[in-house]
Image (tube, rainbow, N blue to C red; front, side):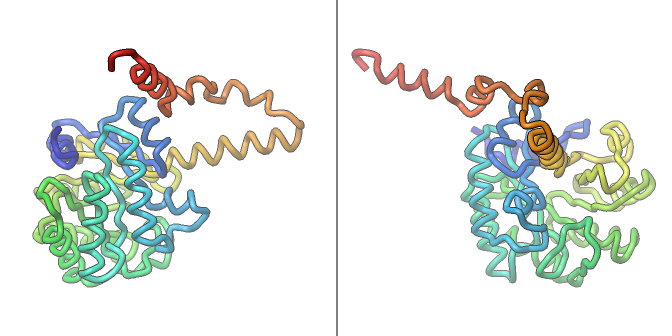
Length: 289
């Protein structure tokens, strides 16, 4: 089997924009695979939310790598993971890379915020000098066991310093060896194109539908993008659906009005492998085996 990172590299080099939904757990990864997408994204915000925590750098590297291993172990698709700032200095970043690589992850992205980081959509962010960001990427590249394990760079400069600084940092991340770059918080096609015009490595768009303008895949393709990550909608839809069910149960004393919105028990069992397990056990019981 090809290294999962080589699969992601191929996706980045296609002539179309590859959509990659984000999830926070193995069930989400199974749903993404079942739907027919080519890759999975592990969203740092969504993982933190699944712990009931804000995305402000509270979760540890051990917790993030453990969740990544669960997700990668549940799907045949390559998984791209949010590695935040790398969880510390050079030694921490090296261990971060090794941990995600051992977990079976295809690629990670590292960002240029100071520690503790904050969700890119939150105010109060601060960035490290561009030289420190470059060192983070160089450290990650040196620590990886395979060149097929991809390291992406992310800058949150747009809401802190503006477009020109985003361009400067994107170029610095490319020079430091980033396999692709992410620049969140862009709001116009002109801003999107400014980034792709500035670098030669693939550029990935990070969608945030309820925070920033929504661009279609065709619009992103015209702006030169290689991939679009949909980090949040699965957990946002999940939270909305659960809230609606709980509200109805509290107000009416029944969940009957929600039945059509529920995945049937049999379909959920099939998704998590009950039928495959039963077939495996039947094969074990066959005489002569």
